[in-house]
Amino acid sequence: MNLGGWTARRHIWPVVRPGAGALPEAAASSHAAADRASRDASITLGLTLPGDTVLYLLLPLHAAVFGVSLPEAGLLLAANRLVRIAGYGWVARGYHRFGPRAACVAATFGAAAATLGYALTTGLIPLLIARLLWGLSFAALNIATQALVTADAEGAGRRSGRSRSIISTGPMLGLLAGAMLAEIIGPRMVFLALGIIAVLALPVAMRLPSGPGQKLRVPGRRLTLPSPLDLWAFVQGLTLDGVFVVGLSVIAVAASPGGATLAAGVSLALRYVAEIVLGPPGGVIAERWGAKRALVAISLISAIGYAAISGGAVWIGIVAVVLLRGLAAPLPALVAAVANPGAARVPAIAAMATWRDLGAGIGPLIAGLVLPLAPMALYAGAALLLAVMTLALAMLQAAAWRRSG
Picture 1 (cartoon, one colour):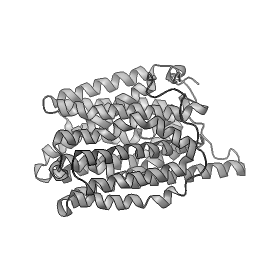
Picture 2: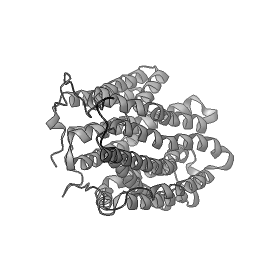
Picture 3: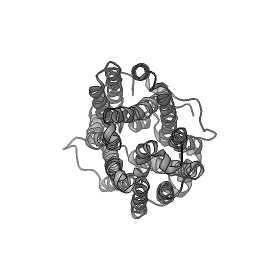
Picture 4: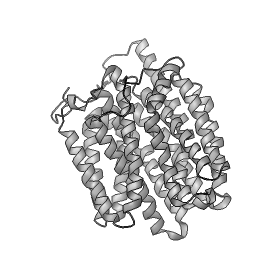
């Protein structure tokens, strides 16, 4: 299959057309099992994720309450991604050895403990330990979710879209509730409640398949030379997950100084609303039009949204980027899966997630330095970088997308 050819007739996953014949009973059972496992993994992540996303909202605004300075708060917000980069290989080996159920149960305990740590501890070192624990827990949950979504190619696009919607519900509700309750009961009590909610994910994690999971690790690889798809994921993390999220909060707080917490919470929650509403249509587009075509088109239009922000059309650009991000959420894993078939599929997804984490960790650091000095130049640079990387990826042939291992 020529993934780089815009005239290709077939797309990433074959479409099953009504009337083509009933699926064999064993195949139907396999599809149902894949749907069920994907759903349970997504619910588990959706219940535990608010503890992390709400921290991005409340820690910078209430740093003194947690006993840290603003620079230390920036370090804490980056620490979970840095430990994921170092620990993905270790987590992947654990997933292969113990399987989805054991990995997600352990990760749920870790996520709940980390969130309770935000509520009950003070100072840089205790909070840093909690952040590192969360980073490893999220790595396990993220790998399990993406591996189970793409385990069966049949219906993977729709399954991926549903997964993103389920996962995004937790952060969206957490951000909205956290923004309102933080002013009433204080930020620490918000994290106490979120830690208790994370514990509720344990029964769901226990329903996941037991036994060894698929082997995820490429021998001898940690952070090897990136494939073109890895480089695109790095740029996406840098721009859409790093620079944009930090810039979104800054713009919201500047626009509503009297209600900074609520304004920032609503702005951050909007990205998850977009994933909930637009994630499933994004999966359908991937199946009907092709995941690569959709990903390239959405990324290019996102770059135009960045350019609009830098040109002064701030809120039009923000809304466009947020909505497009929701559409694009299910696509990268699908593209990585088809570009790296068979046993290389999940290692490629894990590698792509690692490079995206690296970009998302560097993005806030760059934004923190440049936003106070030249915010419009920051967005113009992000637009150019995302557009150039996306166009380069679009022109490559299928073989060039694959990891060399």
